[in-house]
Length: 303
Image (tube, rainbow, N blue to C red; front, side):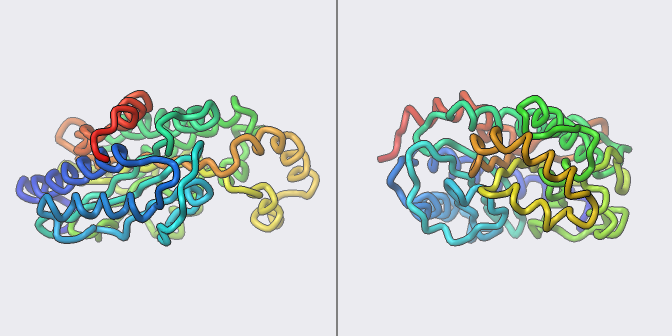
């Protein structure tokens, strides 16, 4: 009953998404270095209430700088600095139906070269994953596609040494990129296999899950997170599976590159409705192309 949405349910979700889109643009309008994360949160949730959303569907994640690499950061109390990114994972609720969108923007309105490289890679991965969400395909068919795009891109940047290495891909691929949406943000429903099994397949080229069907609504949210001192965690995480020599060789090769991208975290998330013959991105009206984001931020309306 929760998995398949009818026209009324979809219309409520679309309204929640549209409200969130306005909130995102307003956040872009006011975002400047020296502001606090909670000022962005306040603008977003004010916009929700002003447009008929009684409450956020999730606790707003407003993370800047080093907080962009924390998946469920919630303090929202850091002063944003020039040259940093701001990651917003936000959701309005309308008529008891939720939406869930993530966007990442440059605090000063301009992506740096390194930020743009990671952003473009995450965006390519998301678009490739969305294209895979077709009726009849496994629910998680988009995930291995996104993971493959990210692995190839990280290899080209020098952050991965072997695109066939499962553990190297696991280091950068830390969650499945799809979940149901409905009355809940991570809504109820059968995914077609146990959660623990899904986790075991997070970095392999296997599409799993129940067949996609008309009326399902899913999030699509690939992300790339380059944690400060992230390489130092590899031995603890993979030491029981990978030899010390292999880990050391990997770290020695990627460390000079990794340093340039530390504390860059990018997540791009949209809400997708499965239709009879394809899919519709319900949140397609919310800007995510980097040039569009920069244009909005450099023509600020709200002061």
